[in-house]
Every structure is written in C-alpha cells, then in structure tokens.
Length: 126
Image (cartoon, rainbow, N blue to C red):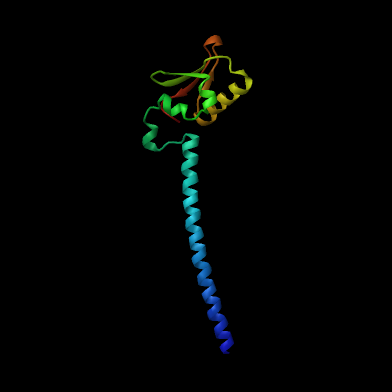
C-alpha cells in the first residue's frame, strides 16, 4: 500500500510540474500572438478607431512601398486623396506590385486616364 501512496505523490508532483510548464507556454503564446497581431495590423494598414478619423499623409502611404518602388513613384496630396503617379514606365511587373499594394493594403484604386492615369488612395483610411 505504501508503494501506491508514493506513486500517487510522485504523479501529483509531476502533474504540478507539467501544469507550471503549460502555464509558462500559454503566457509565451499569448505574448507571441499579441506581437504578431500588432505586426499584421501595422503591415496591413489597419488602424484603430481614433486613427481612422485622422487624414493619412504621404508618409503614411509611402511606408507600404519597398525602396525600389518608391524611387519610381511620385506622391501628391489632395483634400480627399493621395495620388500616386509613376515617374517613368513601370513595366508589367512593377505595375502589378504597385497595384497590389494600393488595392490590397491601402484599399485604393487605379484610375485610367491615358497619360494622366494614376493610383488613388483615400486620405480617410478604410
């Protein structure tokens, strides 16, 4: 009978150890999840309620573009939009990259007007 009692005590001790380890893992996972959510929201352009009422600036928009594309683009501000125009012919690959960023991350659009074609992004956010 004493062997059973020792085994039960040992099992309880191991369960306590495992519970402590699981609590540490759960805390680490919660911290990682928070960090990833913050990263995703900053990358995808999501804004808090207070930020959504603040007009976006050129700097806010430029953060979404990699350096190699920034050199190919001109940015202009109007009352309601930020206009993005190519400095030169972008080619199909760079055009697709810019269009993807404007559409998917900035919720903007391409406006086709011949030589005056441009990308347009709302300053009010999405």
